[in-house]
Length: 341
View 1 (cartoon, rainbow, N blue to C red):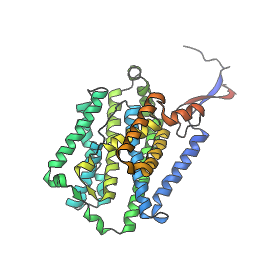
View 2 (cartoon, rainbow, N blue to C red; view 1 turned 60 degrees about the vertical axis):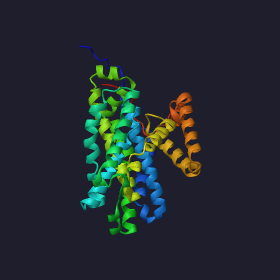
View 3 (cartoon, rainbow, N blue to C red; view 1 turned 30 degrees about the horizontal axis):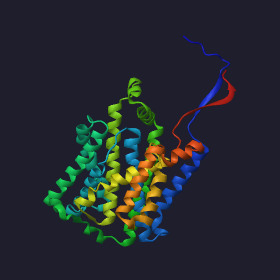
């Protein structure tokens, strides 16, 4: 037995910072402001903010997959489209309340994610990425040939005419707040838990993490299913607001492209980077989206340059200069100045 010297200084584990407290307050105020949008914003503004929240949530789901679990997916649109179609079938075909159907539709990506992961988890690196894209294309082809979802013609959510414009604005506002709370708040809570500590260890070195008792396979499976459900929530909300869905839009690979751009430019494996990247993409899309293909080429070149010369993204450059994390997840040992008895 090793005796502990009574002269050792007392220490405490500190996990929160002043900048973190300010960020949490800002997040809480943002969630409240989003929920209250019907009382201060017009319908066009609400729809614009909803699109922004969708980008944010999808990017954070991809960030959890690639930045922490090491699962680079280019096929998360499969779960967005699956949940979107489930919402339309439940609400339009079976008469379920569309706002309730959003949450029921999340069962579809949760169930589908299990066999998809069992099929894909044996693949590594680029093979896994290609496999996820193939799965998404299979989903698109299936939806394009199913008569009960109107095949390639798609479906319309005409039941929404039973609700007033104010009721729809209230629903969209609450769903915006929910997406931000789940994607940002939920990810932060998870990363600060013991599972988050294991996830960070797995990100740094999966072999070393496994040698210390981390069940790498189970943790990756959990993240994959959670990301599928998160993307499903985005898909259901987005297509409910659009009032129409078809296979091309539901399983559009552009969603993966947007998520990759946001995370790579903002900063992979950081919540702060996702926030920064989402704002950059949203502003760029509003200002330069009219230029079409040339605009996407510029975004692609920017992503490559960041990957080559600033792998930590914009947030990586900021955090290298100022140690003021918005969502701190590291644990610091702080000397209290008192002696242990």
